[in-house]
Image 1 (cartoon, rainbow, N blue to C red):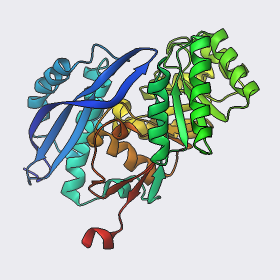
Image 2 (image 1 turned 90 degrees about the vertical axis):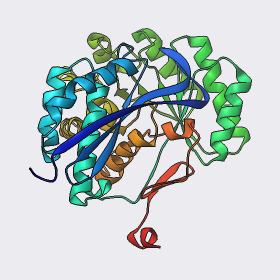
Image 3 (image 1 turned 90 degrees about the horizontal axis):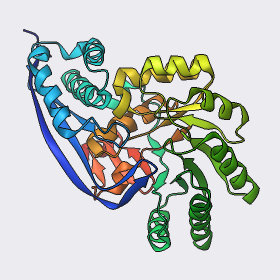
Length: 358
């Protein structure tokens, strides 16, 4: 027996209230729900991963996640954590409809192996940066007071990039964007806006909103997943005609999805999430996207720092991302310090060795 063999796999459900209602074109929620998975090795090293739940994959429930992990426990016990890429590939082949379950389990095995070898997560990814800054999500709402309160709160924390959840309803979206902009201008904030359609638009509505925000002079730098994830024809057309960069999210979960998007000319960029594609999948998607000349966004699901920190490590370690959308911890009550990562306003900073020693 080697000291990196998997000994035990445990799960725990986590339910946390959100600081504000998280609402998109796909649904709304006031609490996040996920499954934390712990993998422990023969030498006692352990690693944690998080299996998120999402409007995007409603069948991937807490009960189904825990059931799959129970099913896999006997298969994985005795395997070497160093073989996490092969483990992840086998899991994805067996459970293609449960990508977030596999991603959380892979992350736990990867982290246990890193602890076994004494390797830091950002260093494993390349160790390129010590600090990154994220945008913050503005959920969709027609309640002006709620919108102004959340926008003002996060602006005062130091955020300058705001990703607005738009719905595909022209009047609502126009008012939403105008309210966010006026709130920020009243506070004297120099800001950038991003639009996230969460699959709620038609091609016509997408192009109309893109034209509208540019005519109004709003500083918008991208439009994320405006069309349904499988509307390849529509995505191809808006990629050709949109005045804003189109960033794919729900369209790309796997390496195969990324290959398809590149072959068919879908999007100007891709949102890569360790929560949906895992460690090895995210790196493979990143490599393909860069080779194809696409822009890269580091993103997250509604998850705790257990899951989010893997994305932070990837963004810091690789320094490969044009956009950073790693904000989920700001929807939860949270600490300032998580291991070697410090939460500083809109940023995340990696402590130096001397700080950790002190």
